[in-house]
Image (cartoon, rainbow, N blue to C red; front, top):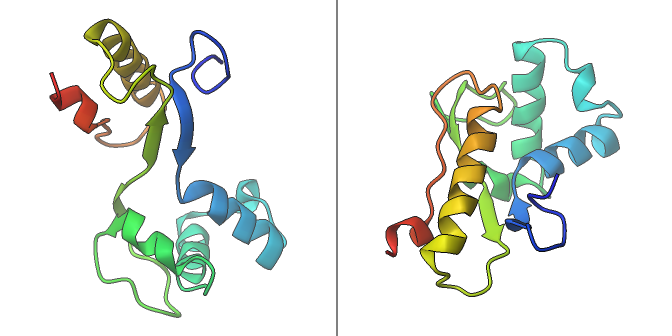
Length: 129
């Protein structure tokens, strides 16, 4: 996929998300893979543990829940998450001919991600012009 790979069609330089640290937490501190998660309650319990882990508590700011997150309890249902996308554009204010195809590609990827509810991509660059 050209989205994050080096080359002329590169769109994203990098993505910062809570998901890779969560997968690392599962492997290193729980000795399981994300694919071993059995059900929603198991996921919410592991996510609650992750979000109160001393190395990962900062990730709490990237997730909005349906209720208050409490230490030692399964995490409430997730309402929204935030990831940072770092674009591989030619400049901080690229021409529309460069950023519009990039936005369209990222929007398509998000739309095809089989997210169970509303998902969208927002970036200041889309508002700049």
